[in-house]
Image (cartoon, rainbow, N blue to C red; front, side, top):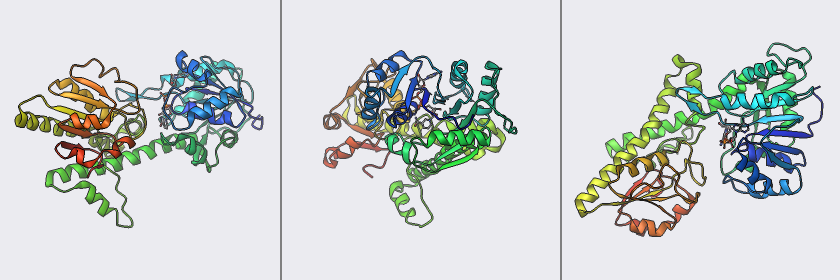
Length: 423
Ligand SMILES: NC(=O)c1ccc[n+]([C@@H]2O[C@H](COP(=O)([O-])OP(=O)(O)OC[C@H]3O[C@@H](n4cnc5c(N)ncnc54)[C@H](O)[C@@H]3O)[C@@H](O)[C@H]2O)c1
């Protein structure tokens, strides 16, 4: 069964990962059905449009749709391979895997001998084994792989995590190396054939649990290292040293590479995935847990600085201050607000209701629901006018348009620069 050609692929979850993956595979001339539970997402893609911000994606998606290789649907259908890229958020101290189970149950009726199923969603170790059990229960007529078994199977199952960087997804999808963890060696071989359709990077084969843990390890590594930078910024604030200069100088050492501090860690990967490791081994993870806490503490520290600046401005001018919050996204040049510390900071400042709050975010059209309609809060698009109107300018996200702000325009302002743009 393992050598059957992969002529049609069904991708479940058409978000930041699933949509670029579906579009890139379809751009190679393979028929792709993209499945999403949201009708508006499906309609948007079938018009050849996209619902997320990602450079160059719209052209690739539109061309694949117009050439007939990509279409979207709310229901899966029979295919040679299924790729699952649905959300795996973290709630109440646990990985929420309901979306994965529901996607698995939705594809189960469409499995047939020779089908490959790949889970791409970031998942705690053991999730792919559990998904295999769910599929096997739904389809007792088919033979499924076992970790220690090498008998004949009808369905191949693998875990293959995604490591693309938002903003560079199209290049990285093709050029990055990947880790492929089959339930068995035959499953890995079959998954390799799928990724070879579009991936030029090396494909490293391992087992499913190691592949699951590898993704979590990569993000926990980043989180721990950012926590070190954030802790340094706190030390430097306490003892009066410029942290940006300090890190630049320390990084001259040939074996030191300290990351940059920021207003906290956001997005639904680095801020979430380390918790999956803590959940898997709570007694063995004091460092990973502490790093999460250090990074989660950072927005509170920024809020402390904003509060201090507001009080100083009010005392000096005798009026309600105006604060400009530059950026809401979780990182530069993306529209993704999930787990964004910048958004959390903006929500808290707005809730104080003791200043005029000008909120800028060049990658979205309007205020998110959590800020819209709040008293004293305005969504602004002209960056220069915003800076001119503000007493306090808070740099929260180093989006490209903000880098063009003239230094002179900041001369009379209180600056809180969480990104080191004006350091
Ligand atoms: N965004 C990233 O940069 C990134 C990077 C690496 C890994 N990941 C992981 O990839 C997975 C997907 O992340 P994302 O950012 O693409 O999420 P997303 O929220 O942008 O997209 C997920 C999509 O899945 C849809 N969906 C939910 N349940 C479904 C179901 N049962 N069937 C079909 N569609 C369903 C949702 O409607 C949504 O459109 C997550 O596990 C995430 O941790 C994301």
